[in-house]
Amino acid sequence: MKLHRFLVRLALSSAHVFVWIFAFHYFYLKNVSLTEALSATALTYALTHLLVILITPFSARALRHGARGMLIRASIFLSLAFAAMGAAFANVLDSMEWGVLLFAVFFALYRAWYWIPYKTHAEGSIRLSTALEVTLALTPAFVGIGLAAFSYAPIILLAAASLIALIAAIPAHRMHDTHEGYSLGYRATFHELFATNNRRMLLGALCTGFEGAALLFMWPIVVFTLVGWSYAMFGIVLSLTFILTMVIRMLFLHFAWGVRSPYVQSVLTIATWIIRGTIAAPLSIVLVDTSYHTGASMGRSIDARSFEQAADSHTFIDEYTALKEIGLSLGRILFALLIVHLAGVASFPIIVLSMLGLAAVCGVISILFSHRSKRVAF
Image 1 (cartoon, helix red, strand yellow):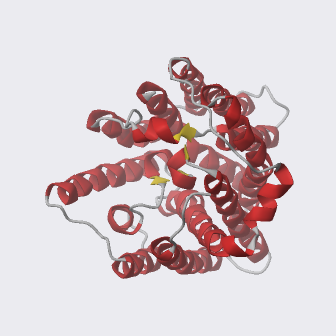
Image 2 (spheres, helix red, strand yellow):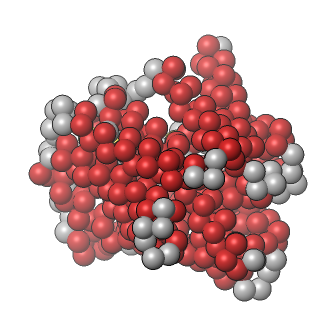
């Protein structure tokens, strides 16, 4: 299981964030407008998470037939997502739009079907060694340098990511199969989602998903523009951030430090989001993102190295996990639709500053809700 998880995260670390950058870059070259490019990319992002919402009740019920088969199918879907984008770059498809669309569909299928059984997670069989985490952290730098050096690098990158994701299905076959119960039907899932007793959970998930979209979707695009549209510098900034975050977190662990107070965490969240709206230099980006990842994001199911955020860290615990995943996707859709709306009335800098400010507010609400919520099993 550890090898499977490493290969999945390696595929995501090498290509996930770059696919959204490719899409943004393509839409910009097509429309010669930053706002239109951001709007078109955001619509694709919204489509991905709309499909996640629609598919999640089906995938959660499928857990009763075994989680192993679902992980294998999810790996195949992830492989197809990167393969579709690679086919668009290789002119196999009619247009780049088809590649972006197919990526959105297959990536949504991967997100909806990728559930790690709680027992597997609790046994610690998916925790990676420091050496493997360092490998994941350095991957964006090597990818970025490669993209800057060779014109055909995107095809190689996406083909490699597709192959790695496909290979990840092999070690999943050796995993001990686990069958999980899911008591809700399709309509009942959405009824429970909007039930009165789940409003706090839903609002918390909405805010968490909203902030996650700002951090893992919009902010990388902004960073890409800030470093002069340089794939090499973009990848280096990401890797430096991840390495520095790992070092500081190890120091925190060694000295038993930590940011446990929700109020301190809230202040860090607001500060880092505000500072993001004022910086442009690569080193400043590294420092502010490191501050966020070492303090504000701890305990919030964010896997920065694979640019993913999932309910309960992709671990299926009970029905609440599926409900929270749907809530996260609703927050991401809201984020994307707000970008589309603002793109018709505001400039790119105004859109960015507005969304960063809203992300700060949602981040604080998410933190306070997560510390105050007390729930028992579903």
